[in-house]
Every structure is written in structure tokens, then in C-alpha cells.
Image (cartoon, rainbow, N blue to C red):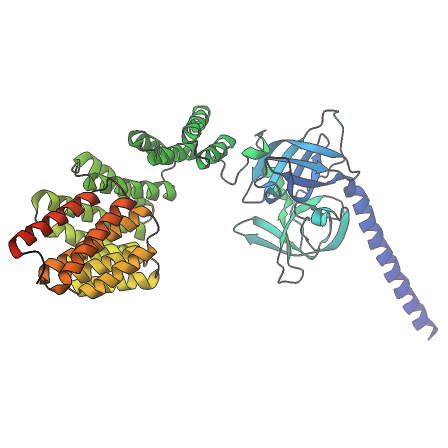
Length: 528
């Protein structure tokens, strides 16, 4: 009995000693690291703080590491150390958005030395005790939490990460996760609210990979390394309507960084929007040559080239062979990146549709080969994904082929996908009226299209279409309703002209007036 009591007392005191030893270790670690931990503040262009997190010194001269997302979108920034001293962020040395890490230098004019943390040279083992020291919510400064490494994981968006049981609160982002030697094994980054103890730190080994010496302002940092300060400035100028100034700034960026494909691409877009087509073609070609696998550049260029082709056809300038080759080249480049691009096949369908319209305009006959090719490409597009505009355009093609029932079904499907798409109602009304002679339903579709059209140009186009339906019905049936139809058509042309002057609607109004006059001369002063 006496030996049993002695054993219990031994075990009790052993546990107490071990607990006290563990407590002493944590206290020792905290004392070792706390002076190196800082609060990081993100500031906007007016130096107003809009976000905060934690960070820590990794060098005595004032080099700090935190999470990239703490300073993302900032124009300026500053830190506050454990004693309340504030220092402006002088420059970004290196950053990696994928691993959510950033390394920066503070303004240290007095050459003050700072306590800093060393980086562990290997990943911690599962079960390793860790300490996290942070400034959660930006105001609860100097908060310590303890835990263990519960797992080591690989995540596509972060690489190697450490799952820990120590809590990570808002404001703890960027704080050091250290082992019992006070070495950084991770940088606290995120946690899952739904999970218990599901908190994660990016491996400290990733810090050693921040080897560049960029020395750039905070405002020049971006997830896209080509989105420099000048490119961002050009965005702001363009949004405020100063397009020429935006082009000038982008020219400066290209002069200093000729490989910045984003600058070429953005300048090309502004040139297109300001009708500088030759300049657009030069810049978009440069952007694509510098970044040939960039799908966004390729697909947007293909869309613009098809729009330019449509403008050429609409203005009856004819299709220049070299220009058509440019259009096809842009679409084929998209398909070389993604053979399943529904948008690219839609643009091919549109390309052949415009060819059909041009041929019809020049020869006054239908070239069925163009229509069939357009139908094939649009059907391929729809096989890879349902799209409203592809359905509407295929409906138009089907109506010219003579498959009006299928054409209406395509428009019906487009309306199901987007009940507020005015163009779907307009084309369905056109098919019902001109191809099926269902004028009443056609006019209902046109009325719906007028209600849904958003711009004056769209409304004018729909009103003119409605007028042609009314005019067609009036002179086809020549009944008592015809008089009302003609005058309603004249009103529609007049409204279209008022919404979109000098667009040809006045001429259509005048031609209908002449047609009405001729009818009156021949048949008397009224319809039957």
C-alpha cells in the first residue's frame, strides 16, 4: 500500500513537472519571438487604412514578411511594432500571390536594428508543438496561441501547407507559426469557419523562395505581375474618360518594359474603342505574340475582328480578302488554345453568316454553302455549351434555309435561357412575320422586344423591324386594317429616327409615304 501511494505521488509530481516544463517552454518561446511580430496596415490612395493583419521581421534592418492578401489592393502601408512605434512601408522586395506571401522593407532612416525570426530549414513533423503569436482583428495585439501540427498537406493554390490546431482569427493572417526553438515553420494564412481546428499556415520554406529584389511601390504590386503602377493608372484614366492620357501612360510602360503584353493588350482595347483600328491591330498582334497562350487576348481579339467584319459588311465596303484572313486567323488561334471553345465556333458561324449577307447584297442571290457552313459551326458551338446568341443566330440561319419551325424553336430556347433578351424576341418576331405570316404573334414579340431593348439604338432597330412587319401586312392583305397598319408603321419609323437620327429611318419613312401615295393615286383615297 505504501509503495502504491509513493508511485501515485511520483506520477503526480512528474505530470506537474512536465506541465510546468511545457509552460516554461511556451513562455520562453513567446519571450523570444514577441518583439519580432508587428501589425501590418494597408492604406488606400488617400492614406486611409482599410485592412490589417500580422507580420514579422526576418532581418535586423527591417525586412518584414506577411501574407500577400493583407496588402493586396493597397497603395501604401505601414507597420506598428510591439512598442507602438510606426514605420511606413518603403518598398516591396518580392511577393508570390500563389503562396500568399510578401516580403517588404520599411522606412528605417535611423538605421535601427530589430529583433527578427529565423526560418526553420525543414518541414515540421506531424504532432510537433507550435506557438502562434499575432495581432487578431488589428486591436487585440500580442495574442499567443498554442497547438500542434495536425497534418501536412499539399493544396494546389498554396503548395505545401501545415494544418495546425492553434486558432487563426481575422488579423492573425501573416503571423509566424514557430516551433519550440522559436524558428518559423509557417505563416498563418487561413482557416475554415465550418471546421473545428481546421487552420492552415503556408510553409515557412516558401519564404526562402522570395529571392527577387523588385524594390517597387506597394501600389505596383498585383496578382498579375504585368499589372504595374502605370497600367493601373491607365485603367483609372480610361474609366474617367481620359483615353488619350491612358494611351500615353501605357506608351511609357511599353517603352520601359517592352515585354509587358498586358500594356499592349489594354492599349489595343482603348484604341479599338476610339476607332483607331490600325493601331489596334498593331498592338493586339504584339500582345498575342508576347503571350500566345493567353486565351483572353485571343478570344477578345476574335470577337473584335468579327465585329469589325460586321461593320464592314453593314457599310457595304465589301470584304477585303486580307481582312478575312485576319478574322479566320484570330479564330483559329483561339481553337489552337482550346479546341472545345464554344465561343470560337460561334464566331466561325457568325463569320460565314456575314459572308452570306455580303454575297446576297452583291448578287441578290443566296449562297447556300455559306449558310450550311454557318449552321455547322453554330451547331458545334451549341454542342459545347448552350449560348443565347448562338441559338438566335442559328435561328436566323435556319429561317433562310427554310426550316422555320426549327428556327422558332431555337429562339424559344434562347428566351428560356434569357427571358430578358430583346434580340431573341425580335428575331422570333421576324421569323413569325416574314416567314410564317403569323403577323399577330410577330407584333407581340416586337412589342416585347421594344420593352426589353436597353439602348436607343436597340429600340430604334426593333421599332424599324416592327414597322416593316406592319407595312408588309398592310400591303399584302389590303383590308380595312391596312390603313391603321400603315400609319402605325409611319409612327414607328418616326420614333426610330428620333431615337437614332441619321440612321436611315427617315428614308424608310419617306419611302413608305411614297408607296402609300402611289397606292392612293391608283386605288383612291383609302384602303378597301
